Amino acid sequence: MSPARSPATAPEPTTLAEPRPFGRGPAVSAFSLGTMRATGSPQQMAAVLAAALEAGIWHIETAPAYGPAERFLGQALRALEQQQPEQHRRLVLTSKLLPGPSLEEGQQQLRQLLERLGLQRLHNLAVHGLNRPEHLHWASAGPGAELLRWAVGEGLVGQVGFSSHGSNDLIEAALASGRFQFCSLHLHLFDQTRLPLARAALAQGIGVLAISPADKGGRLYDPPPPLLADCAPFQPLELAYRFLLDQGISTLSLGAAQPSDLALAAAMAGPGAGGDPWLSAPQQEALERLRHAGEQRLGAERCGQCRACLPCPNAVPIPELLRLRNLAVGHGLQAFAEERYNLIGRAGHWWEAVDASACQRCGDCLPRCPLQLPIPDLLADTHQRLAAPPRRRLWG
Image 1 (cartoon, rainbow, N blue to C red):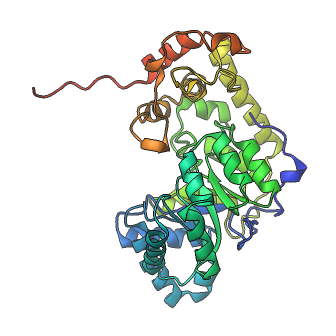
Image 2 (image 1 turned 45 degrees about the vertical axis):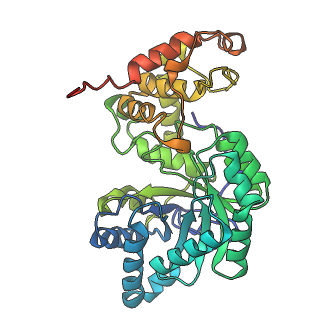
Image 3 (image 1 turned 180 degrees about the horizontal axis):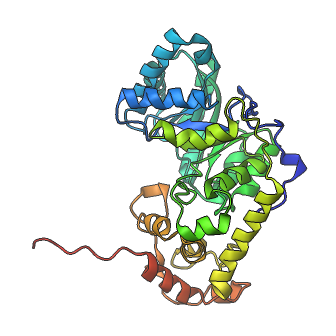
């Protein structure tokens, strides 16, 4: 479950409360406040921002795509600048722009973004959802490349990066392009396939933010009984956080909807916490027990996530689907696996497009699986376990 930490990727800080390098920009906190869930009112945003500062979090992440988040955050930032100018000066802010606009459209979007936040200069600007090859082309050789150069050259942006829900090959190409100083990736205790990419980025001096380990990492803020038992005496979410920080990840995003959502981060990395960033020996033992328990429940049906089964002639994303099955069967994460599975085909380029029902039992994958798994049977079982029942029509 937890590979040994490479000395080359070890974070420089000695406690979680210390600043952490993030590309070429200002150092960031171990945890980052994601603003996508604090959009109910300006008061909600202000309360969450205040709690983040109290918890020792000074890196704030937002986006125009988060509804009114930037507008509400801008109001909270203006009030903070008047009431606590020292705290305001310490903040590091990251926002994003979706790929695709022309240079002129992108310039207008950036100016509007800065106006909403009440800023003259943004520390970090990311391409939001660099998920397809055409998005990378836009950012590296198309209008996006011009936009990013202009933004930095005009002093409106300190450094540029990207977030991605795309393939490993695409992320690798983006990191190798030399265009970006930081990235936001799906890096999770229960999904470690992108950790080699993160280590490679860190070795190049590229900052790495882990996207929502609490939510996208398995809804670990609401763990099922089997997972709680496997991780005892530790909380699954703390183990997940410590696992990622132990790997040298620059910062972990937390999408807080209320101040209490930041309690664990405050306990781990807040002022006076003095938290050791590494996994302790008992925590490492807990992770090993967790891994062993999952393997025991799955038995000979555990997918090892080697990806040798790809490509599938019918474009079935076999490893991702069997990963969801691993989580449901091996760790009791049924609700999370169902939620993710039933988003397939409904989230555009942000998530998979084809579910397990597309398997035609052609057998093309079978000779390539080193574990000799009955992949078509496991895909059928995955669909039966996770697919939502058809909704009964109320009329017609």
